[in-house]
Length: 138
Image (cartoon, rainbow, N blue to C red; front, top):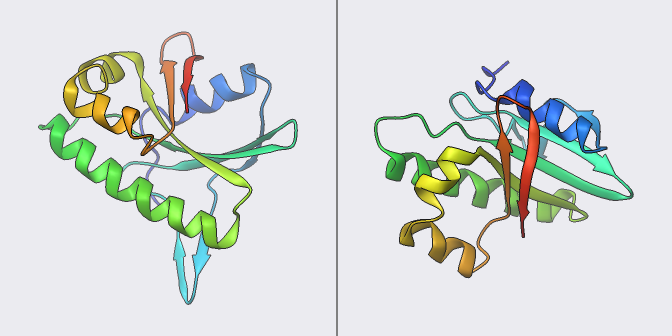
């Protein structure tokens, strides 16, 4: 089983506090003969269901040597998972979860703003200490 991201439990707890029910931990996506644990490196996908809305959450710590490299990897992962979800579970929306400081350092800069502007990904911004969701960005 893949290793969990360091913020796995804070995000899971934040979703529960926000009224979500965790349904899969991790959510395993199958396509053809391949199973994707939506976990490359230290990341894990949590699936949650709330008020007939289904979401999948990929957690990223952005603690590597290069935030640009971390962003490139996260974006590639996000696109892969998004496309598999469209094939298998099109009613489930995919979100990328990251802590507030990482959001500010990446997505409040031009490199991240362009991704938000073009709506290339959906984000959950969380406080890792209080274990709460601060912002949903669609």
